[in-house]
Length: 265
Length: 153
Image 1 (cartoon, rainbow over the protein chains, first blue to last red):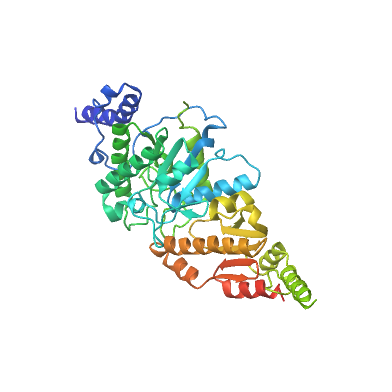
Image 2: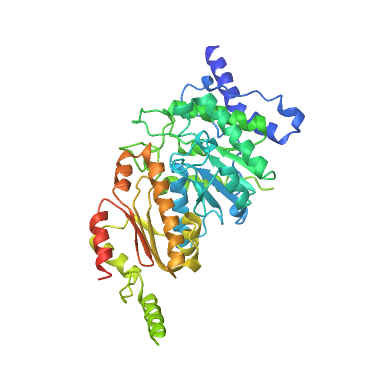
């Protein structure tokens, strides 16, 4: 009997994300019927299925041409990887642009721009993210932030800050489609904050926020986690230090996930 | 006649002024980079293109006669080598402003989470010589800067 209940519970948890995905495609008046996920339901920091956008055929070559990727040092590595590929003559994420800065978070992105702030630069000028998105005229906005938020602001406030940031972006660029990427994990031997568990819990609540607000959730972290929820060692470029940044192999997995978890209009 | 001579002298001085700040020597910045690469391991660095220097630094191609822009392939290293020769003094001022901004951004971004890199950046500086602007961020910045400067002698 106990085994039967465990199986039923596991199935329910596994199907929760699917229910959330279904609600995104329903009419607005049905979104409210969706039940948010609870991080406490997950013993390990792993989900049985990716949350949010599910696997699809690879997106078309032009899909990322109107895209901006916003992020911290994690995304900065993706930017460098993509830049190197493009400069070698290879096609890589179309003509997608990047807005990255080390130490950037959804919290400090809301601060005023000054000489010591860590806002990213657009064409050499440091500016608020929403202004840069407007100047870029980006139609798809992919955001991965949280690594510099969760330990400092806490999970709940980090979610609030992300909602505020997205709201500001949509005020400046009303037609933009928002794609929130899950914050990626850290390797097992790193125990400093933000811990892997904190990042996972943040991702679950971030997913809930996406469903509630009609934003797309792209669960990049899903493909970066081993069976215990830690970043695969092969994907980590700084195992002796922060244990969170990516190797080229990690970037390849990231790009593969993005291209097979898109949303064609 | 004297006025014309002064004018001609001034024109000649402007024409001769290049990266060396007054001497006539023209320096191939890519050759300087090759000299550095022969003595230091730059294999973990990648070159940026003309499009990249607009996106990353805001430096317009029309302001630049030649350039070398190398950044670390990994995001956990602050290493960066920038050599720009601007087309004229006004352009050099614009390039200097952008490279200064880049330097400050690197400091800000490294300050809270990469203390070692922050120290490395702090020990480096943006330099101007004639119409050339340079920034070398590296553990070997001092020796590399000397090689760069020697190229103009």
